[in-house]
Image (tube, rainbow, N blue to C red):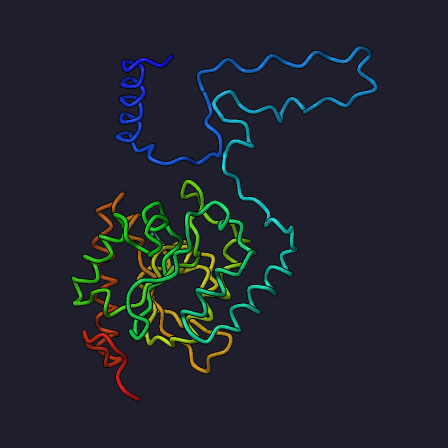
Length: 295
Ligand code: URA
């Protein structure tokens, strides 16, 4: 029988973990890391009829949970090939003619395994009529809970960055490369990015923003087809070429606010980028108003 004192101790342990930042589950099963490792299976006599259960080098390291207990990138349930997944994403995205239909297409799409581990779809925030599109990487824990990009601590810093050049969420459209949260905020795999890209391209095609702000290395490298890191790319305007739009869209890579929270000294560089972005807005005739200029 569990005593009240035992309950209190468990709650204390939980509170301690939350304060230390361990505030979410990344495995489907709880794992007792303090338990002794299971005893090795007895060897079959003679050893010739049975292959070893696992090569010694494949045994889990003592400080790591067994692989099946960690949320790993998983193939889609259907085991569709990458090209089938791509074709399905392209087909669903192409059939959408509005952001609402993009949402429905993503709800129907089964090609991105992140959907299975995320709480919900996280598509966009802000104003679809806005001439500025901001593209981040992937939802984090709070975005996953609320279903909107950039609502956690990085999002709050992004809001302050936008406010510094007179923008708020009514004047921008905010989305991500990925629409479901990678478990434990791990980096997305190239396959996950590729499976979601047609939906981003379709949003750009439908909304036709005048300027893009590419937040973080993943977004900049993917959209600009570059391999350099964000510290090289940031602050340099580049043309984003959409496969079906006649004109390129000017795009500015900048530092991710989550990075700036860890490296506040880099805010100076981000500020330079923002000033450059504000100048481009001026050139494009983009005021602080929420909608695109007529015509
Ligand atoms: N980081 C991102 O890139 N996007 C979000 O929506 C939140 C954090």
